[in-house]
Image (cartoon, rainbow, N blue to C red; front, side, top):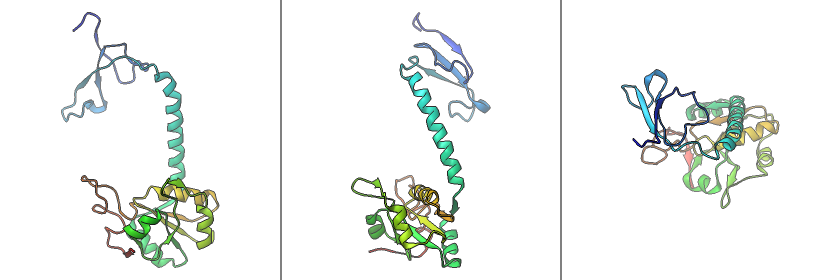
Length: 205
């Protein structure tokens, strides 16, 4: 080891500013697993010292964490249904309005649930948020009717639902997993879960 380097062990919470240049840290994680090993133990890392941007990055990181926590709280105010649950809800509540908030090309060519109204949350070519989304939903549904939102995998529909709630819609539902579901290990959708994978009614152009 070079003369300028040294070795020391420190718990994970120690030295928040980061170690000096070219030091080695032996770290033990909770439960003795720090390096992904099933046996546990310590993990050794070679580090090059604190980044000159670290101090400036900390306030931005704290702000991002506050924003994420706020989003979680807003997410809890919305009701969430699995695809089969959403289908049952729509059958039992004919006054509910089913809104597909994907792009027009997805709605037409990938397919969409039977009976879903199309109101894009964002669309190509620029994929900017549709500034008329709330107004367009109001055209197909009054604000006192339940709104069930679906997108590709259940993410855009959360953002769209938050916008509707902020505009005064009282009963908003998000379809978890969306129309196509998440990506599988081969980066394909529609093989794990989602409206179409569950065999629920759908159609395409």
